[in-house]
Length: 349
Image 1: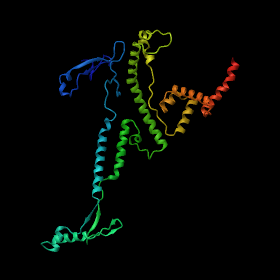
Image 2: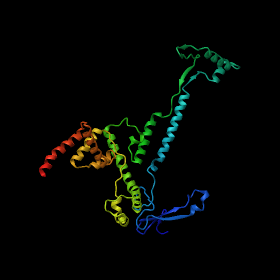
Image 3: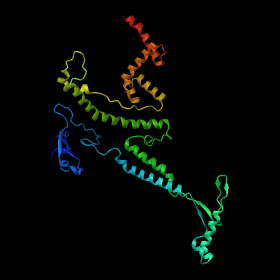
C-alpha cells in the first residue's frame, strides 16, 4: 500500500487512520494460513470514538510504532553482570572447599634418587602416614597440627581480582540507572554512602523522568479509555446529570461536549519525603508566596486529591468540636480566623 508503514495505515499528511492486525502469530506453525491474513481496523469511528488505543514512547517526529525499550541499551551490560556474578560465586565456592594443603619438600623423583631403587618411595609414604595417624593431640576441642619432618601447611590464595567486583557492579548499575532514568541508589537499593543533598538531587531527577512517562501514559492511554467509557455511559443513560437536564441531552450533544467532559488529571503515587520537616516547610513557603497551589503540593508529595483532603479536614474540625477534644494547631488557627471574621460579617449586614 502507498501509505502503510509497519502495519500502520496513514493518510497523505502522515496521521494514523488505521491498523493492519495479523490474524495469527507468524511463528504459530498450526496456524500458517491465518498468519498470512490481515484484518484492517480503523483507528476510530466516524464520530471520533477510538477503536484502538495505541500508546508508545515516541523518539522522533512522525513515528507510528514504538521503538526499543528503555532496557535495550543496557541489556548487554546486564548479561556481563550476571556472568561476572556467577563466576565470582564459583570462585568463592572453590576457595571454601580447598582451604589449605600440606606441602612436602621432596617430589617422587628426588625421593627415588635419595632412597635408591625398590620400595624407597613407598617406605617414605608409609612413614608419613604412620606419623600422621598417631598425632591426635587436642587442645580443648581443637586439634593441633603435627607435621612430618620437612612438611608445611599452605593456604589457597584467591588469584582472581575479587576486590574489583564491587566497583564493577556499581558501574554496571549506574549504566542501568542512566538507561532507565532512575537514580543509581534506587537501582542498587544502596543508600549507605548518600547524604541528604545528593539523595534529594538524585530523586528530583528521577521524579522528572517518572512524571514525564506517567503524563504520556495517562494522556495517551488512560484518557482515551475514559472518553470511550464516558460515551458508553451517556448512550445507556447511566451518567448522573444535573437537575432539570433531559436524559437525552448529552446523547444528542456529546460530540460537542466530549472534550470538556473527558478532561481530567490522573493521580499516581506521590514523590514522598526525605526530610519531612524541611520539605513541608518548603511547601508552606511555596503556598504562602503564591508559587505553588494546594492541589500541586498534595498531588506531588502524597499523591492524594486536594479536594478530599480539604473535605476530610472539615470533618475532623467538626468532630473535635463535637467530642470536646482540643484541636491541633492548624484547626485552632482556622477557628480563630472564623471567629475574627464573624464581627466583620455582622457589621456588613
